[in-house]
Picture 1: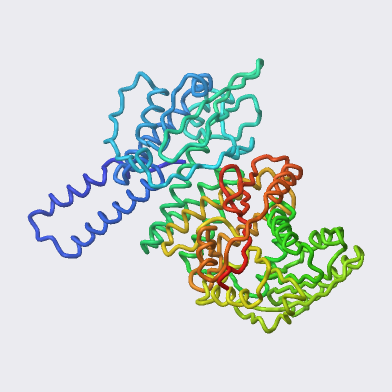
Picture 2: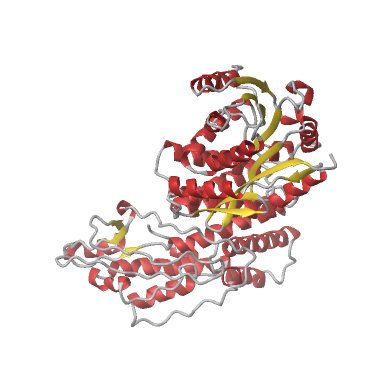
Length: 589
């Protein structure tokens, strides 16, 4: 890669000063002054971008950096292979983001006898090393370093007649053998801390060591998180030029990561790009159908939905104790995965099973098929097999806010006990004015013995975009991290797509189109309390059973069940992710 060195012989400042001095005797035109100002503004924007991405260099110094890179390339072509082996053992490499310092150190190592190159002026690097507003930790994960992507210095011998040509055209080529490798030994850093990398070399006895040039994935992980946060902040400030440049860099930085960090960054980058270019994701019947299918894969991959169904069913089972006729109104029917387990528990209940009536509510199907009727037929066959008397009715509704209590054919409470169940549905009403109030009013008219609610344990419904983005980045990073332990399968891939669609809606959409408006248990408690509901504590037996089942099905690795004021939470390590709560009408109502 030959460069034209004459372009870099004079720094931009010198050219500008020469231009001004040579024309000082002439009046400076307004157009020229505007050109000079535009150049200065462009330089300031470039400096801001370089600082945000973690490169400690000014745009005005890039000519000097390019010249040093040319010198480094020439030296690396001239040095013999055994002269480079020190880079894997004895050499201390400075942070490559400090371009000038790093180039000086490399040049001095390759040519220690040469005159030292004067260091560049010190750059303000407080963005990376100082106190930071962004406290998100990088998710641990190995970088992707395929052997075919590793590069080593070409050390093949050549004749003396071709030595000069080889030195000029010497290039990096893929390392064809695993004799030499570099591994990183570091922990996930806190933003604003120093990242260290330990290099180790494995050398075959019969062959010489080859130095491998490798990028530190942990350093890129820190830079990736900063770029994500800076892009969101630029969008909030309506600085779309900076945001557009940053979102492109996020894609490049994400490639250096592996596992959860790479996946979650890719989904957030897509969502940010959609927001920048105003490309809203689809919200239609086909999308609802796809989400329904993806949720089934999510159910199979991880314990979150299974936990939600089990804990809600246990609360309903306790509320139905001794009742001869029971009726469940399900706001989240989908595939009906929750109800076979409850029907089995009712079938073996002491005193015999009750008459079980189920009302399922769901969105219309994309092909106008009676999807809810098909689900009901399957449940009816199952009920017949376990000898439970079963009644079913399905309601198609675009939104729960379209429901009315008179549509549900309610019977007197002395005759039939009613439970209302909602799993990951109520938060979708928060973007519709008066929607959640309307639904809670309908629930009050139903007068259920219990109202079970499962929601995500996070606040993604605040008024400030940057706050929502930060919270969602924490939340989904933890969720994706928890999926890494699941076996690789189609279910796992589809589960990641399922979560990615939520990220896209949460970040890219606004107004009624943004339906992923999750809130915390305390926020829901305030809503329910002001609407006439009181907590119905889930029993300690349910907590013990949920913990046992979780340990049995998942080995107890990473997942954690905890009790919070009569509600049950499932989390990954110390972070709660979903919450099951139960409610009943307060005494005043």
